[in-house]
Image 1 (cartoon, rainbow, N blue to C red):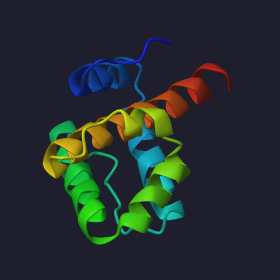
Image 2 (image 1 turned 120 degrees about the horizontal axis):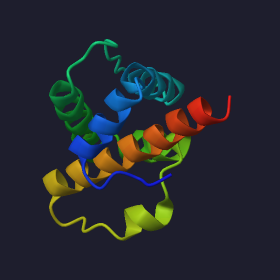
Image 3 (image 1 turned 30 degrees about the vertical axis):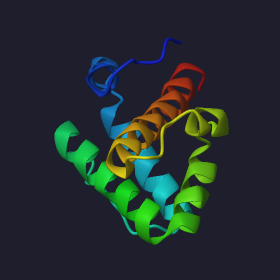
Length: 116
């Protein structure tokens, strides 16, 4: 599996394989496990998904850092990749973390689809 390099690539791959709704469901499931009140409609537009997710990550970083760390743990985002990010600009950081979250969720959905 080759991971997408951009958000648009990720959405394109998900749509090509008819897995976009499963990606949204996986996000909803992991946010529920992390006890974060965010529930996307399965028909949410990709642009809205990205913006809402990024806004939530930004708020978590600023207001509920422990919940943010818990979310990253539940989703299983690589700690090494998080450490490589520049944390000086929180807005940029939230954008990069959002993409890491989506890539990890995409991996889960893709593997489950391939091997089930």
